[in-house]
Image 1 (cartoon, rainbow, N blue to C red):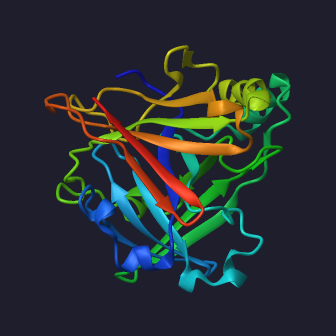
Image 2: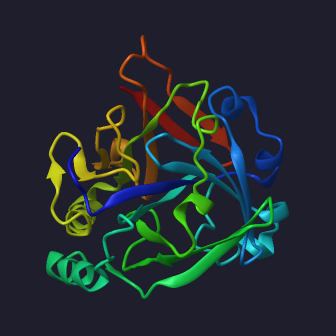
Image 3: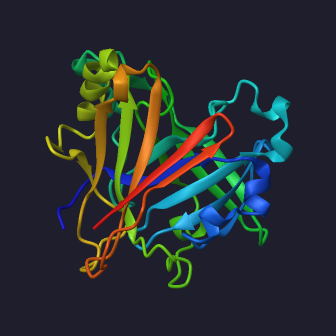
Length: 269
């Protein structure tokens, strides 16, 4: 597997609070849900869908769907996939200065703020700590944020053999596709090229690695970019999950309306 200093860490799926505690069939028939916890700001709570390649889908909800907790939050958005995070290998120092320099030369107007502390308390009482580095000059979800562990990654992403076995058989994340209005494609593409240090392939997008590589999971992940259908305005994220190489037949995409939002998850080998 090629060595990448940029890796896909996780994707964020915003759901109603009830969904965390009483998951609907479209989740339970496809995925094994793992415990999460309450975030340090006491505004949001999560559960996780962990994959064998080290990535995960984070189901996040505002506690009790309280409007006061949602108001002004960076994920005050319609339900659905709202954001995604990159990371760097634990033996590779995050070069924020280099990232900023590349972005400054991209002409995209996108940059990154200083890292800020984050964390949550797991259901078993363990504290999890990390640092997040958020973009500036872009809408959240147009470009990724960064997440770097302070406590051991295994504490935040508690992968076990059982937690990564899913009814849908997904073994990892193949692609996150950013869909934007046609007028934003060039700007966002310039930013993504700088963020991933120019690694791209026209048919798939911008190449990133996975936190766990193995003989079974040797394929890269990708950040794709395309204009919204029918020239729509705004932004939408969709996720493509990878099925094992020996999977027979395809799986229908998940297209689930939640309130005024939609969850879009595709599958591919």
